[in-house]
Each structure stands twice: as structure tokens, then as C-alpha cells.
Length: 340
Image 1: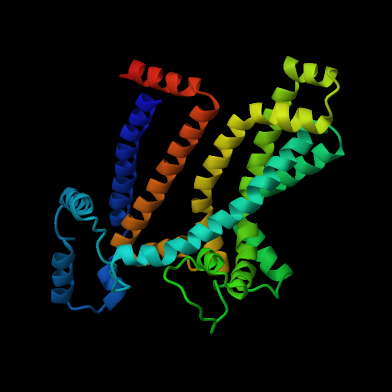
Image 2: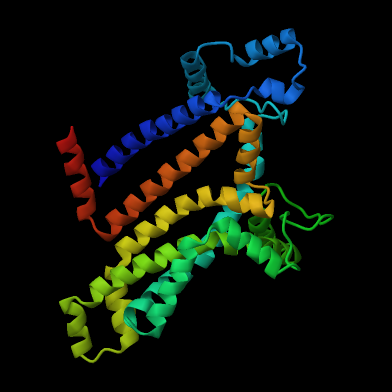
């Protein structure tokens, strides 16, 4: 287990650096100049040149990348936003909690719904519950998140969008985690308002992960329900709920855990569209505006954060897999040794 963890941590660092390098180079290949976007097409050439030198954009690309990585490793510095007049770290600290709460709310909806739907579809295979659950999952996978969001806005016009709380609501807080902090402080009126504002974007964001989890859970459960030990459990006269929940579900947990973790990472990508549709002030909307303005440092910092979260989620999945099946760690180390 220790060797497997060391190997996975050794892989995480270069993976994150590669993702950062791709974003760093890609944003600079966009035919747009952030200085002209800020000062207009009639900017003074001397002013443009001074800003280029100030931000180091006149240097070769490899020197810019090396300087950015050096500042990140030595000082934890992600640079300053060119348009918001704040450090990228402060900007991410301001918007990231909104995305965390939205993602977790979507998971709270998606995981129970997907797992229960998959179990129901497997237990009643080829009957109407199975067909209903699989038809719902097909719709969830096929329909784009932004279209579901627009439909929800028109179908429920009385539900609030565009904010995390109504204007004029003040309460004691020390972080930007509105829902979590109000829960811890027992400010239930703020909790109710925050949940109300969170409902529509969380429902829209949860559709794809719920559908994916349902389909994987159904396949995993069908494979386990056909095993010999399950037939033995049926033959002993165990009730259906005990066979399904106590015998079949634990043995089908590995693929369910893996797809749940992967969908957690995918929610960060889906949050970009969801936050744009609902004007949710989170990481996705922050990134979209930065790309539109060619705000280099913001795009780099946001991409680094998302890549690190993806790597962390995948590492967590592997550790959970090792806990459920210790042989997984041995196979992972052996495969790595063979590749070397």
C-alpha cells in the first residue's frame, strides 16, 4: 500500500505540471492582446510596451513558463489578475467556495439517485422499473446541461437565480462558504435562503452524473446478482432486501465508487456551463470571463486548481479502491515496475 501511494504521488506532480504547461501555452496562442482589451485599440504604443515588460510578456515563452513555475514553487505566487486588480489567489479564494458548494449539492442529489436507480433497474431487470430508470438515464446523458438549466429557469420562474443569497441579506461570516458556515453557526434563515438559491443549478448539474452512476450501478449489480453466492443466498431464504443490500451491493461497490469519483471531477467541467447559465458566481464563471479577456494569470491559476483537484480526486478513488480490494495496489505497483 505504501509503495502504491508513493508511486501515485510521484505521478501526480508531472501530471499537474503538464496540464499547467498546456494551459500556459494555449492561452498565449489565442490571437488576443489583454492590454488592447483593457485600454482599447487606440492604446499608446509606449504604454503597451511598458505593460508587456512589467508582466514579462516580452520574454520568450519558455522563460515565462519557467518564471511562473519558479514563483509558484518558491512563493506560492499565482500572479495578479490583469483586470480585477487583485491577486489570483485572492480571486480564487473568493469564487471557489461557491463552486464547492454547488458541486457538493449536485453530488448529494446525483449519487443517491443514481445508485438507487441502478439497483432498482438491476433487481427488476427487463421490467418497467428497469425501462423507466434507463430511459431517464439516457435523457440525463443526452440532454446538455445548459438546455436543462434554461428549461428549469422557464419552468420554475419563482426560483431565484444569479446569486447565492438575496440582496440585502447580512450575517456573520469569516469565509465565502455561505451554506457551510451558516449551518455551523445555526443561522437557519440564511441556510434556507442559500439552499433555495442553490436548488436549480444543483439539479441541472446533477443530471449527467446521476445518469452515469445509474448505468454503471445497474451493470455492476447485474454481474453480481448472477454470481453463485447470490443464488446460494436466495436459496437460504434470505429476504430480497438483505440479498441486494448486504450481499450484492458491497461486491458491486468498486465500479460504483470509481464512476462516482470520476463524475466528481467531471462536475468541475460541467460547472462552467451551469454557472454561466445561472450566473452563479463561482469558478466556472470566473474562468470564462478570464478567457474572454485573455487574463493570463487567472486562466493559469484556475487551470492549475482544477487540474490539482482532478488529480486529488483520482488519487482518492485509487485509495478507496485499495481499501475495497487490496489486490489493486499490488497490481498497480507491478504494472508500474514493468513499464519502467
